[in-house]
Image (cartoon, rainbow, N blue to C red; front, side, top):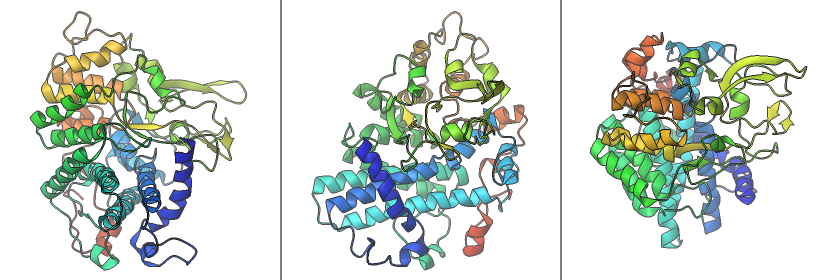
Length: 470
């Protein structure tokens, strides 16, 4: 595991400079690898694949696009005083986002730089003289990553330019937005191929597997309104017996607990050193203070509404939400913030805390809840509730206000997956975003459920249209 993480450190510095068209078109010095003298051996492609996986650090960063829309545009969290361009960050919280918002442009770049790295591997792999089984598996992994990014981008922006190969700057500037139906078709095509290409268990820790592909494929079917096929994919994962719930919900969040039977796809971090890709979620979600030796960013501070929705005997409340911290003077400071990625023994390096927590993109509890969504059968949701000792839906003691499977599932996903970047996507997928968020005081409309196309993008490419309402 340590060797894998060390690869990530070396390769990220080597390849992330290739993340935009301009830097890649400027050939690297002779002493550095470039497209002309690289992509020859299996070792070359191993490094390139690892570089493609490092793009997950940007997309799923605590201050990355999935965090901002998944949580801050939902109803679980808020931000107050926060480092950086506060006004642009508050716009996500308040549904006042403008096309000139610097974060929106940054997120657009995050995705397309990530896609560049993925497409580069796919392009070079096609003509490589390598073992056929290796090429098939690596291609499947890259198709999974590309699908994951477009799955999120469509929900964030709607129509976006569909790029399935590396482009020159001139080509990129002449590319229009692609209809959502075409992007969805490409996602389905890529995932279908990846499903048959990838193994049931990962040969390298952190790499995509068949189960990860099927989980994403099922979610893609759900956003397309096809519950029947979604249920088929989820049931195949369920019946594979490759995954199971950990006995303790709280144990999921121990910094040393990684890649368990509950994990379907997990982003790898290694804490303890400034040269390792350590986790930043603890620091970013800690209140805006530096009294403990590191500077918390105050992202995703927990609101009363989600705190109050936990049932009285639900142990997930204590495991998910911290209620304060003791400062250097020994004084307790009351504050509610996500606890899932706390690493209180991690070393402080500068004003960073080198936390060890991985980030789970897909886990088995999520899949069980999605199974209930796809099939309407509460038994899968009840497995999740049983782990924390709560009465099953339909049994005595279950909260009567969640009197349909749909309402019960909405409640359960909010409690089980709190702060894991699912909430806004869940509300959008189930057509519940507007009534739920309006009730919480959010100034949301149908048009505001898509982000604007960044002004700078449209300045560069005149054929890129703007979303309605902006």
